[in-house]
Length: 92
Image (cartoon, rainbow, N blue to C red; front, side):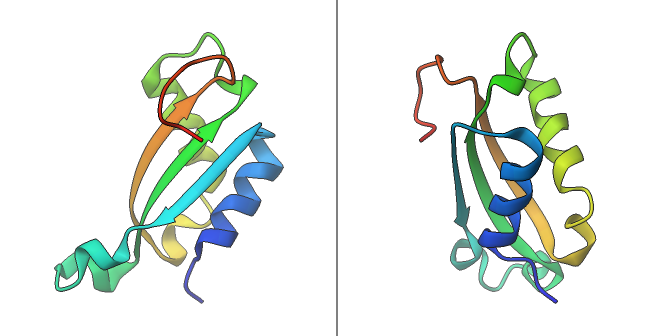
């Protein structure tokens, strides 16, 4: 079963209790790319108090840890924008 945006959003909501989360399917940008056959390409924009005081790398680790069960089921590439609710930036 292929992983979809809804699957990723559900897991992130359950594990990181975000104030905002947006999952974009970037698959259309990778048509013809060999890795596209191995799974989906997604961008995650997430705001959570769980990221407070953490480095960018540590924030990404939290997201990857939350999604670890979905990775073999269809996530080939994942771009992450992780912020706290009070940080400015493009994250929704």
